[in-house]
Length: 472
Image (cartoon, rainbow, N blue to C red; front, side, top):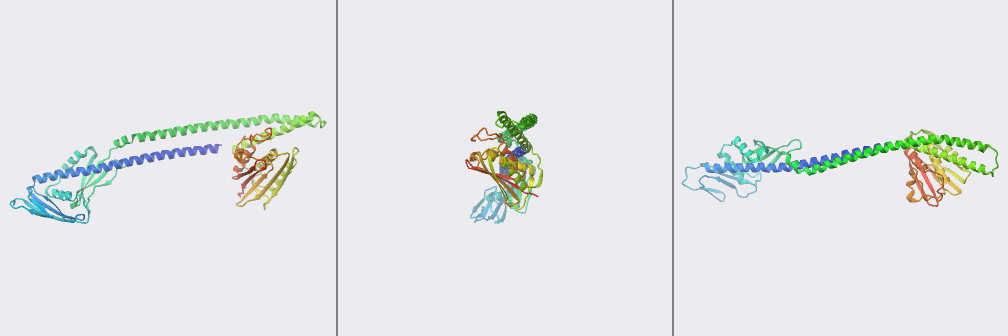
């Protein structure tokens, strides 16, 4: 029982840790997913803020500049070259990709650049060309840029840094996504792709909106965890109470057995004294004394069996030895053949190559004796018992006891191994017994690491086999 309680405790604790771990993992993934979505929104905000900045700067350049700038570029996703013009006087006309300047405006300086950008696709080709023109006609002011972006993004904006790389960046990307323990993220936004320039912006991902959005999930998870811990605490409390009750029951049984042994022994002594006197066999007092003696013997046997079951339940260590099983079975057969109340026919079929067996001699013989006793008890006036012992391979020995008794119904064949269980279908309910025999058999076989089998048919008899492994 103690081992089972420890196993249940261990399973309960492991299950609680597993469930709490799963809850934590689920919450972690949910928060991580929410932070990822928030990171995507921040990347879109950063991109939109830079586009707004470039648009405003471009409009100011076009309004104030006295330089006409023409940029032509070849992109892989356009058959014709893309051309963009910045002219304060609106004197340029584009026809078929060719820029024509109207005469009469000689005070306007013109600059022309052509780029081959066919190594990549660009969905914002004209924006890229306009950006290039803007930064050819202006001087980039980092402080002004930071103030402008900070007004657009608010407290989420931490800082920005211009980066010139070896490859052109055409689409916004998240360089460092936010994590549960690091709420900052790094976004790289195309700034002036033609000149390999991009803007790396560090932004703050606030946790408060994420936690507010997950409030009910976190409350539900917390309630489930609390209920789990309370359930486990209640389970442990009940198991401790059960253990205490089991200890009280065990102590009570031990005390009862100890207290009953003395009056029973005294009763048997008195019966023996009276039985030693010469009396007529037909004397009624003699019959009474014989009945008292038999019932005293039955009571002594019940107490001994109850003591054995309690000790086996408390996991008394087995005394494993090597003994002569053949001779031991022969002695048991001889004892049960001397039954004076019924005609008992016992046969032994021994088919082992060796007489030696490894196990607890006394306990194994008690098991076989219990099975033979049940065969005598639950059979008619003529009892036929067949005991067999043989090797079954893999280092195992099988001992079986068969009889011609009343049999056991199929729905009760598992229940008869339970302590104190007695079938209600027995024809003679006055048959002595307290339902401990087969439970004792089950415990001793399990203690040896063996197994049991039952074959029974109502009205035809029962065969019970035990298999005991032979470990050196």
